[in-house]
Length: 591
Ligand SMILES: Nc1ncnc2c1ncn2[C@@H]1O[C@H](COP(=O)(O)OP(=O)(O)OP(=O)(O)O)[C@@H](O)[C@H]1O
Ligand SMILES: [Mg+2]
Ligand SMILES: [Zn+2]
Image (cartoon, helix red, strand yellow):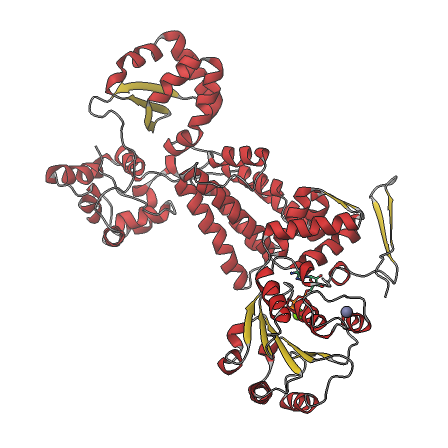
């Protein structure tokens, strides 16, 4: 059999759209077949199996029953054939079969009468196994052993297993069984106990990459590193899959494969889509979100794949947002890394978690049969319109402002008690004294307009200020190093009526004087307004008590159950949470 592929690729691109013709001649062999390993040494990433088998052959300790377990396309059938050659080669038994003798060639070609491959998936019956038991009695024709390879052995029916078991119990000395399965849990214990088990491993990304690069070199294919990596990742540990993917891309791109080709040929999610999508969500631009999803669908990307990749993207942002040091840098280029770092600043940790929840719901929607496009679009818009995590005290404060009559009760009661419990326990649990009967559905008593999300109108609240604060400082730093470092010593504690309250620690009274100088204040305000695109003002204060104010939420003794109970017992609070589509992420005493 000839192995040389003849491929003719004609790219004709003087007219648009690019016209691509790919022509295969009959002798063309797919990569997976063409590069089936011929020796133990050629089998990649399964040394724990191949070394043991080679030693067994060398020491004449080959058993009569083997079970090869492992994911598809990792070398089980290949190894079985190499073992058969090792045993039957004219030079054999030898750990290095020659590959050139008549026996080796027959085994390679699959025509050897002494190596029988049976696919249990299509021969599941007892009769087949009975026939096999008959067959087992015959002596090998040319070789030294008769080797039965039973693929997908877990598919055999119960009685067939029993019949096979009998053969396995007392196999004639010239017979070797090699059972292969992707699902060892389905293989009965009785079979397991009569065979020697080898576990084939999913091939690592690195091993797949170097294997693919080797083959590309032999095929004169030019492929960039990013492209190889993408293929390897998509193959998910299967060598066969990685080679089939490469076939597919060769058909699309010919001898030159770029990352873009791989993405296009395999309908993968382009990282750029993820970045753009995230930016659109961060800027609350539903329209942009929908445009990006159009691009996703046009590129033929599967909705599930997109969501999986998006969740992975969010996960990286989450890791960065919580612990910048812990993230593993190695997998990304410096450029990608910069983008991730920038995007991680768009959101608070709470935001990212909520985005991920919305994303995870898509899988449920799809399972329930919702149209793919609809499901993605719904969650995309939901993400874009999701309010940034609003601190509860901001809501309370707002309520207090808009509802002076109630707020007395709300805060007064807590104040009087002077207990350590958060204020939510008392006032909010009561019914609203000011509300008319039947006003439950009348939202005016809980107006939270200043906090509610609106398409494109991002309210300037504390989370918005905080999430952009580092970037604001960077901008300021370009204008005044000194002011930027002074400002970085303060903490924005509150944003109210477009005014930021920035608090310096006790030792910072000179800082305060400096930033309040007219020139400096003007520069700070100008930069602030430019950066947040909003007419902001700023007030500076000194906190005499604390040196470094804590801003952790939920560092109190209330458990999740306590919080749930609180919410359950307070119709007002419950309604409020519903109104903002929010959730309580922590409770803090209001100063
Ligand atoms: N470990 C490996 N090293 C090199 N090539 C491999 C390896 N595993 C698989 N391949 C490639 O994949 C092709 C298929 O491999 P093989 O038939 O041995 O997989 P398998 O484990 O038996 O899969 P399945 O469970 O689907 O039967 C081979 O022809 C070879 O090109
Ligand atoms: Mg196989
Ligand atoms: Zn040979």
